Amino acid sequence: MSGFRIAIGLAAAWLVAGCGGDSGPPRPLEIGLRGQDGSFVPLAENDEVAIVLGANGLNMIVPSLRASDIDPHAPDPTVEIEIGGTLMAADIEGSRVDMTDDGVGYVLWDIRTPFQTELCCYNCSAGLVNARIQDASGQAFEGSVTVTFERGGCPDPAVCCQNVDVCPEPEQAKLCQ
Amino acid sequence: MKRSLSTVLLSALLVSACGGGGDGVDKDLGPIDDTISFADRVNWPGTDQGGGRVIPLIRGFGEGGPAAYWFLGFASKRTADSFWFCREGDADCPLDAHHRLNWDTLVQGPLFQRIPGQPDFSPFWQMWKVTVPADYEPDTIKTAETLDQLDKDGVVTVEPFIIDFGTRFGEDVGFQEVVLHCALVLQGTTLAENGENLPDDSGPMLALQNRAGWHEGYRVEFVDFSPSDGVFPESADSESRPLMRSANIYIQWRHCGGANSPAICDLPGYAYTDRRPVSERGLGEDITGDGDANDTNNTVGGIPCKQPLVADELPYSPLWGVNNVFVAATADVAMIDTTKDQKVSDIESVVDMFAAVDQGDLEAPVKATEDSTGNPVPGNEGQLFFNCPNPVPVGYVPYPCSDNPQ
Image (tube, rainbow over all chains, first blue to last red; front, side):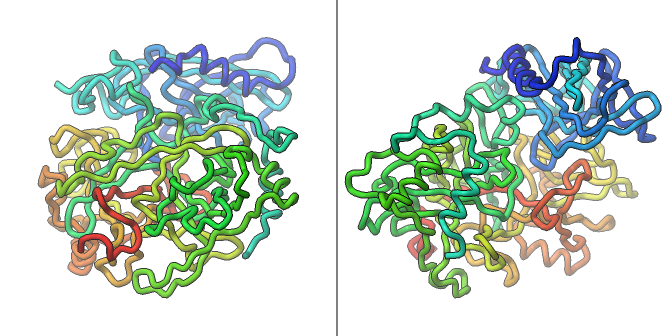
């Protein structure tokens, strides 16, 4: 399946999200996780990010976003994950909440971002996380980071596909040995 | 009738983006898929695979043996409105004598008032019967606006569809508004293993079909579950509009961290460290070694057309209220994670389960109210519900149940 290429997906998402004002180029947006102590922990290139199973039966990651000089009132975030040229995950549209001040910037916490493919197509794979927020003033904030998705350590041979058809693209399938 | 058509259609028009064609014939606006962003796809059932989107078949246990269900994700007791087109005087429309959609008599694809992702969407539909004249051209009406106009003009009539359900699993139901299960899906979505062997290897399952309908002028595809699920009377706690009936599913868990922590506690990757579901889907791997990762020890309270084995259990419904059941820390209960066999467990029915509860081997079931990240589930009075229809054998009819082999 090649219908979900990143360019098409991002263009559609940006068109949906980007109907606001004319406020100049996007400003930086950090992508991170909620740490053990509740603080915002920024993700660095090649970090590992834990996959968790959502009650809707889809595996997901739960990133948070942080920006400075942003209007924190109920922004509309977009988070998408591209692996091997295929869009595999996007955030769930939820009720909008305010960002909270953590002393460094404003944080939008715990954005549930489920994968729409089987676990064996992305577990222990590197992927590009793209995030964008447009605040109430129309100012856009963007960030991206490449991370590896894992459910408890890699390599993880127990997570495997029975055949290549399980994944959108055959080369994404980690076949059972 | 609890609500008038005008009330229903007014609410539909308030959320509809496009009007009719102006000449009484609605335009075909193309597939709804063309309007859906990648992010919005998550609201539609299934996952993307090489051949298209697939709805997984999950294995568990029913009334003392293997059972299975297609997992379509979150659901709710609420219903949405759907409109089914029949010719004047056709008593075999919209349902046949077995309470299945009668595609030989239906004049055109139905109108669905909601799609996945919209706030009031539900795959459980209140049925409205639209009676059209003999000269009605199929698919003239594709929007609520045109339906409303032609109803006002006296060209068609629209009524809540009500049938006599008689006695149902010992309950005197009688005449009730009809609720139907149709899962709206993205184009080409398939049910995994549709038409293949039943989970107990008793024979092939009845293959279900995708059908076509309309939503505000857009083409939508849906899985017609009426050959297996039939139709349902509204739930007894319905008020201003019908609610869907629900049944119970019991999700088996093991505690982790004790002196005799079970082996599945050593598997990585689950959000909680103090518990593990006895579920390959939950654990993310094939713990029975049978070549798939869809086995669970989940136990359903009822199966289609069967009286529940436990007196207080609700009869089968594809809408499952989720209950969590934990093996007591000190108990020795064999389930699929220890038998390594999807078909062998100490808990193969609700009878087994409640007996184990009485013996202290299982803790009492607790209704699930939070998702896996600990967030409360909105609506449903806080309870978590899944949409999980069961496959049935070839030749099965949903009504009357006595027509099936006993």
